[in-house]
Length: 289
Length: 250
Image (cartoon, rainbow over all chains, first blue to last red; front, side):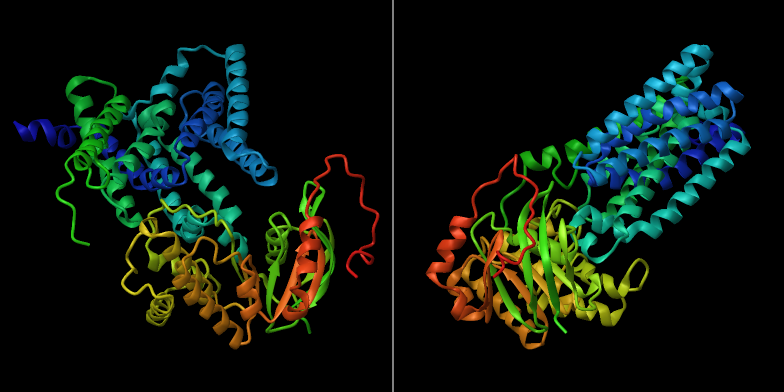
């Protein structure tokens, strides 16, 4: 009975196995990115980027139909253009990154919607918006796994400057010129992982599998390495449970995954070891030193 | 060769000078105090030296030093204290020059980090997140990082602000130790008593240089008065400066 509900779907159906492999790949790469987004106070930047890449993906979709390569390329181009322009403007002027990004993503969104309204039908876009992980083919799965691998490799390369830039940007500027490139590479990783989440979660929820696990991790540890590990596990568990939920109840997979993550998040907010609400209300007797 | 050479340096923001026409040299191994009222351009000068701010005019020569040979302790460091990093790891970033992107942190390097933490009196704090430290403890951590940077030029921007006397004494001892090791130290300071007792050379700054030389000769009430008066006036409609810098730096 329990086996039928929790494991059966994956032994029985190949599309469920593919979906599971995809969410695990997405978790491995996306969750660490989410942790850095959160710690750099850029959680909403991830959301803005999701909007920025939408028109690029939509244009790719209109030009060559349901082809992940075209959509990925379109999304990457739009995302990189917005991220790099925003980053460059923020770094070379006094404008804060968030204000700069808001300008560029709104411009990108407006441009995309204009092109789509001239050229295509809106119904096509539903797929782009909400994704369908259960229709994932081998080729798409390979692309997802490839992007995840690239993400982890690049993250390993920029890890030190990224950490130092997050804690003490001024210090990094005095000892190294790696800060700027590391920041841009990080923004690129954000875009890659958003696009990567398209098929599974749709453009609107792709950022969810990055940000929610990071938020969960924050309530369980004060250590960066531990946070990253917790976030990856939380993302993978949400992905797995979301797929089961989706399979059993016919809820679309993307929302199901994010809803499970939300439940984990609420539990963490309430019972988390680091700053959870229950812990704050009942802290126990104060210590000796 | 001088450790630092200022040639008619003007530093500022948005064309408005904060340091105006500074000329002079800092000898290798010198221990220099930079004093002046608030807004005198002390921090701006230090930012110019470490290369965060490019001069509007003139040039600063580092006497063959690389940017990596400079350790800089900013005044209000833009440090995100909520970031989950331990004292050990934070101090360890001072080894960037040797470790860079990928260099391993081996046993020897770990010992070095532990020694640096011990020498600022923070034994036992290695695994504490930096967010849990007091202001004075954080300042000790920053000094430990400067220590690890092993720089030949050390630039400190008001390092003893809002620090209690015990911590100040400990950190000042460290500064003097650096001086004895032959490193060049520049520090922006407010405490005249400390400058008089511990710093051999002083630059009195008030946008333009007021006086520069041995502390005993330079640190006079007259000079401080002049500095106080020169430091006013930000003129939004100021004309372009035509001065060559000689007259003011006399």
